[in-house]
Image (cartoon, rainbow, N blue to C red; front, side):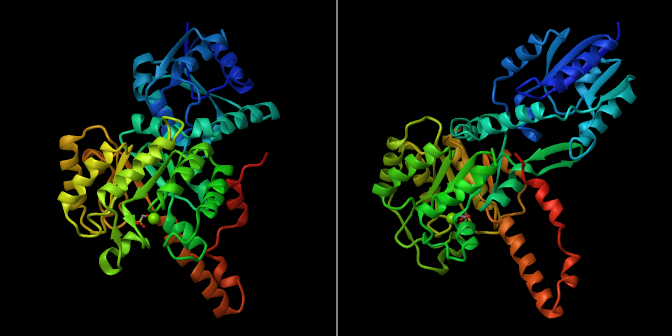
Length: 431
Ligand code: SPV
Ligand code: MG
């Protein structure tokens, strides 16, 4: 009896999957791998049902002789173990980043013997409806909200990218890359106060009010499924913060990060060049406590951001505050620095981790951008936020285009640097 292997990473079985299984049965004994959660989130959607249910779903088709868990995206270990005669897959993986998986399969089949069978992908209204339904489920507040916590438990380092509109949200949602034979994508989105304000042509001084920030969140939520972390500035008055926390939680935002400053907030990247006042430990812990008390779920996170290093108050102050904020109920600590050298961030992580091994640490490596994700994870960091790079790349590009058009009195010269609109609208989903 020939052995046929296929791997599924889906939450729902549709006609296309059944078609693959039926084709597989024509060749012999069918073994189906179900991709583990940790692997699935690296390049695909977040699973909406647990692995055990996904395994059961495949068993229920009655078309698989054996169902097992495939731990990695790439097939090296599963092919070595099973040495199947055939691997069968839909032909839709020939394009895009999934082609890296196809290449890996071909390499392994060459090494261990065996053949690749590709069946035409089933495109029809019913399949699209099922696919859309999975995506819609992920976007629902009750599914989206808890996802940051789930990812923190699953990934060595969760990666968030700044977004400030539907379009930037789509970039964070859909960018998947292959590097060194591995696939990767962003896990979450950061709605930066700096970039949200900048997109509106306003300074980052809590001038853009919460209603407007919520409008941005809503635009992003409308077209994405990944979890959202809001830059909540200082959190404002405690009396207002409790209402805002409740609203964000209900909307399905996963976390708010508030910084321990008071009065007129200025952006941290200005450091001590501008006047900024740090809140007292008593004042800020009261805000954290009030926010936590207002919550209705265990899912939403209030993360406390420490400005001691930015304001040059020293490591001792940063650590004292970190422990006090955790004690007050903070679900994570963000430590910020505007030094180029990551030394003080690493020092903070080392000292914090000596006493606290579980509270998530968040960093924003805008200034200390030479540090790698691997180094951050090794230092005990759990969440890295790329806080403003999309805005900073778009701005000079747009400015240059405006200059070119003015200089040449036409758009021809600018055109070589522009993306055709048909490539941009590929990102946009049609119903
Ligand atoms: C933001 O992105 O708005 C932040 C991070 O608060 S920073 O600009 O580095 O202060
Ligand atoms: Mg900010």
